[in-house]
Length: 112
Length: 115
Image 1 (cartoon, chains in turn orange, blue):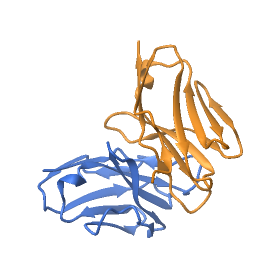
Image 2 (image 1 turned 45 degrees about the vertical axis):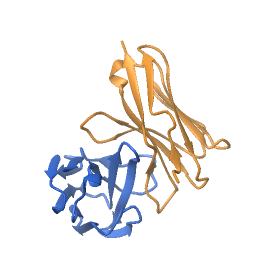
Image 3 (image 1 turned 45 degrees about the horizontal axis):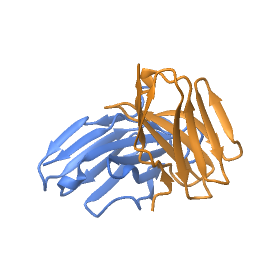
Image 4 (image 1 turned 120 degrees about the vertical axis):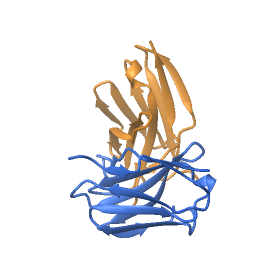
């Protein structure tokens, strides 16, 4: 049973518009939520994170929103750029003793 | 720091052969993780170590898979015998903690193809 779910395998957006990537989770013990970005032939790289005590974290063009009651988080990219085209993984873990659990990923394509 | 180093980058082997994947974590990181990426299952955790000791190997698919960490700077993931369904990209990652807002640092991965 998947604890972290990314139900949209792919997303296409035009340059300059907003990209919204979604993630749902089932484990209420999760305390940390992270987004990773992955380019072809490279390893995933950390993008942004949020702890369970917050509902929003912003870093430049990237904002992550957390809705604990709905067990849902989203990543907003504004404005989207062609260089943002990559696979985005949502990940979560409990505070201690358990490793990051990843979703299956969403492939974002930003066209110019 | 050179980051997490994995070797080889690509491996093509015949079914039934033994395969060994290698990883050098970032110096000072106490945790080392092995993940596997496939289209069907995404990034799934295979095993992780803390201070060279395996902590959770519940993700290791079957007895054909084994992992070792003989010292703080080296880990191996071995598949014996290999099967076509083992074809995937295998990632090693390291961190100073398990639960962390800073995440883990991943290597570039080993693309394994079993024919």
